[in-house]
Image 1 (cartoon, one colour):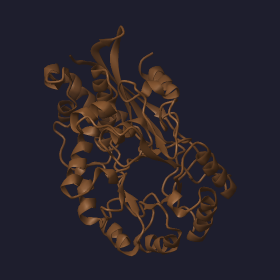
Image 2 (image 1 turned 135 degrees about the horizontal axis):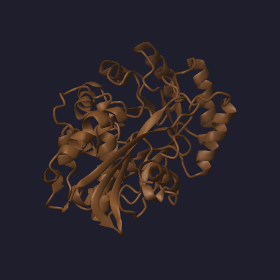
Image 3 (image 1 turned 90 degrees about the horizontal axis):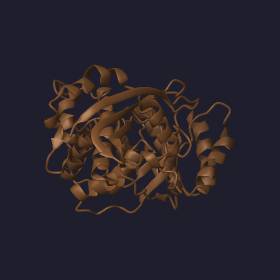
Image 4 (image 1 turned 90 degrees about the vertical axis):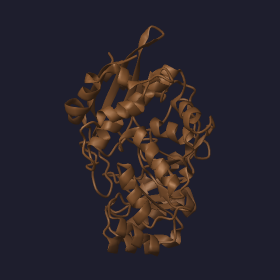
Length: 389
């Protein structure tokens, strides 16, 4: 058993939308195929992966370091003999050979993208959906039959004013979502409050709305927003300040009684541990949003989950960023608290299998081997076109 080839391409996910910190006019992502010598139905088993939105494609790092290390390794060192499969942990260790600690900004994305493709291949070789493989190996076979999801949108969009925001959120409710998320922080507080109140007119009470500042605020601004947001009783207030400013998060947590959410831009177990240790987060209320596709992949993600358990946090407090099928599989198989969803943006990467319906902000998963990319026709067509055909 061996990996015979690893292919990568950079593709565009550009759009005119913006959050408080960046626009997406030149956004890219990497797509990867891990080709194996295993054959199902007369074709080689291929695992696919991609990185989540918000970080650009990492093809150069893959080509220069991580792919050559895997292709030059003794194939026998990458095999899980107990399961007659590839070994994601050995593959991860090989990729990270001669990498110093720290520096988790870009290489974590490159490794996480390849790691996703490896796990897709592992589950396909085993002939089972990834969420079932994870549950069988790490959760005594218990799978969540459905996963809570929320509709992430509400971006700043040229020409799309308050009425456009309301129409967008109406469409999410029509598609089965009850909780929606919108961006804040690009316009003055008074203008954002008008947008929030317009969104609340559509979704109902504050517990149906999340707001996300994407790390834009200094402490003074974060506290000003907290004071203004508190009466709305929102579902959560997300990533007010820089993701590594744990002191800001701790001070904000002391001054805001509602639920906080953060963590999507922390790309290692060590950074996640610093948030848990120093960020003042409430383990009985708050949400952490670590994204495996950006943070060295599922191998590292399981270390992060173990760290949280050691610190008294339930896996149900984890709701991954990314809005894609990989995080959905992890949520169902490892008993997380939910998953982000992108019903409209970052297509065809956002969203779930074509047959999946959202009911009361919950979704099921298809009975498809691997991550399930083949059940999302537009995404699978792109992956085949860029990496196989």
